Length: 381
Image (tube, rainbow, N blue to C red; front, side, top):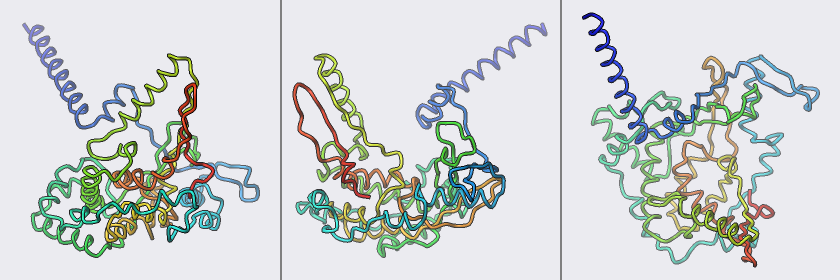
């Protein structure tokens, strides 16, 4: 009798356990695809510890040594993430070319950055409308859980449970930012957390990439602004047909399908095909803010919104999270944008700033050749 009870309890436990994992899998399929894919591919979380680092020897830059000195690790980490591969601040500053007006751009690119006169700026009026309590509540409701906060420590979970008065104050605060094209000074401060690239860490800072931890209220404000811009750009035909993949209702499926068909046709008819690929691995770090201003002006985005967006990406400082949760001294971000603003990046940069580079094509030649060029020879930095 006892044996039968034990077997029944084991069977019940097994069924309960199986049902739990089925529900968990279905939930991941709907809400956390990354976790589902990692589970299918048996990927394990990878972390690094900045308690040791390979650094150049002071009297011989070509020779490296393993250092465990916290100060040296901090200095080398700041230098790596601030200079973006340049040897000094002076070299980096000299490489950032200012583009104040259209005439500062090389002649061959000016037509691609010239304002599109057929766009009526009144179509952006909805972007400038006052933000409502309902927009704030809807944004808070859709925030994901278990995300790292910015310097203040305010999490998404905190925002989901705030008092209605806080919703009202937040609405007034966001509208003040929108009307004045200004943001709080503390929104320009962020934490940087290095994570490993898909290769062995090996105590080499070059084998890491940064995750920027921004203030959650800033991110909510950007979500609302991005959603409004998405609505305008999705409903209008301001953008080129092949440059809309980051907008609502659009995806990369169609251009990838065209590319797949071109390859299949080349195989079938045994023709040559050339495909040029642009490397965007450091795209976030290489944004020229003055060029971004001209790109947004091309789409005749209202000056209020342009100034607000540029406020997000200028006069910023980051601090690096080191070993044992120690924080580095702040350093100035010289160029680029925060990867935490990827949705705004998709809406603005990839759809405007990136457009001119990918517009120019070689003519198709026979018997069968498809060629794209990214204009590396004349690329604007």
